[in-house]
Length: 397
Ligand code: PMP
Ligand code: GLN
Image (cartoon, rainbow, N blue to C red; front, top):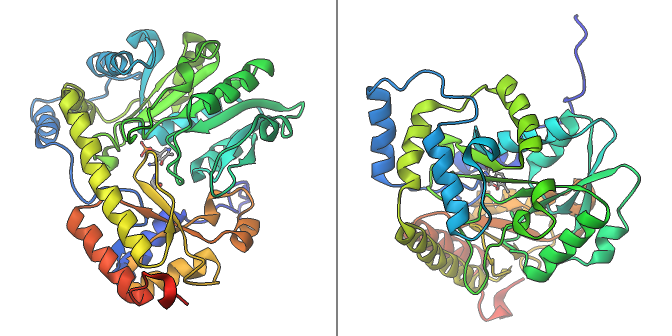
């Protein structure tokens, strides 16, 4: 047999795929993988179809369609999150996932350490692994899921090169406030670190919380790569049109990797996203209002069914403590909930560098509320009948 590398052999199937397959096998309502069960605007679909019909079917410029990059830079500026040169500092990627991968490949060497708040999105560990770097988890401790300067300082080593931040945060729904962002900024400046900030849920932030890009704080612009995506904002997760803002010396390296990874992202879908980015502010306001309705409905259903949900400040996820319903570890409980209640969720432990330790101590599931109100109502009813209609708490366990 030819020898093959075992560098990737310890990566199994992502929990998002595992739980979607489980949902299909058990006929469950899928509140697991974070994708909307509705499509984004018809005009956007029509624009992509028209682009195909008009013959926009060959390679796009590797950094992305100029018009799309201009509109993305304009939106950043109009939300008060910085001013970027669309040509030199904005790049289109095949999803935020590819942007993260290119940033990790392009900016780090074997042995480098990258601090990242836990729980964390699974692609960070894999992306760092692919260039020989290592993610060091900084725990966001329940129930506040916040951190202090000391939590950061005690994880610094001579190999620390960067901090990777995700706000609005998947899975907790936290949106870091101004003082938390300043703690990160002071720390990054003091240790002269690179900063990667994953902002894919930037448009899904619920009042009174506000989205402020870490990249736009004084001292940050030159050291920061801000990564986002059209996936959540326009409800087209399968189109995989992501983007990144970075100063030219960092953009150059991201683009070097991008050109040898995919070269360019799908041309007609970029044309579709041009029309998406031309929507007015009303679109974003309505999107948020729709998500607040979905969030509040699911929060109420979870509480009624005996869970203890944390109110998300942003994103389309709710994490909920289930310790009043079961002593099982989160993976076992998520599987049983899918089998017995018909609702698929994501256990929290796969979001930790040391998943086994997290599984011992945490009793949380993540529920996605990027679903129609009827779907969420049906899920609430199923959870309630599973737990025995438990509010007031008396009937739980
Ligand atoms: N980062 C986070 C925190 C996410 O939740 C997701 C979810 N899809 C991504 C990155 C990837 O985004 P994309 O689908 O645009 O690759
Ligand atoms: N970001 C989505 C989530 O957290 C899923 C992305 C994926 O399936 N890889 O559910």
